[in-house]
Length: 303
Image (cartoon, rainbow, N blue to C red):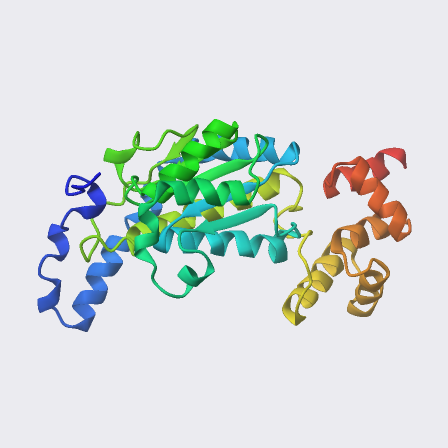
């Protein structure tokens, strides 16, 4: 698409047309008023979000992976969400991957021209050996980014499940996907600057997709991240506090139990709840497909 003037993301926002005449407080107020439109727009996509989560969960249970594909801000947000899954949910780095047009360099320096090649998007999936069990989620605020279009088209040919996140209702059908998530946030405060409302909406959508999928696959107990990877002092402290809360232990006992579980929180909880050692706890969790709730309740049923 050469002329994108008809896309919502490229329209002028009449509410910010004179923003350059305002003082700092006035500018902040205009931006804040526009940002307030984002969460309701995402909420209106609740059914599409739930359908996408179901797709991701089904593929995860088949051993599949989730790939985010985007350019510019969209690509950076995909890489960000993917990079946060291992420390938060204890996933392998390969489970959720971010693919950005222009590669790693584009994460810190603009490489806008890289988005114009659809074959490059397809090639990135080939490089990662995307297969039919995987999910490919294209992220394109405008909905027509060639790099994303090429990647999603290749994914469909492979037989992978496909998702599309866009903020342009006019482009819903520009990229064929199994589920399309389209929060309509309207024109940007600065015309075409989709790092703003569209970027915020995209961040909310991606957070929801991975968080809900991880909850569904047993990575969360209640609202506690029991599969977190304690890779720094903050996460070690959080692991100890979660174990203290769930097991009723003091800090020294919780620390000792975590050490016996090689620092893995979920097995430590099972060790305490079922009075078993570390290898037995891991076997119980495997039998319960990673569900801590099932692992604990199975022990109560036997008791």
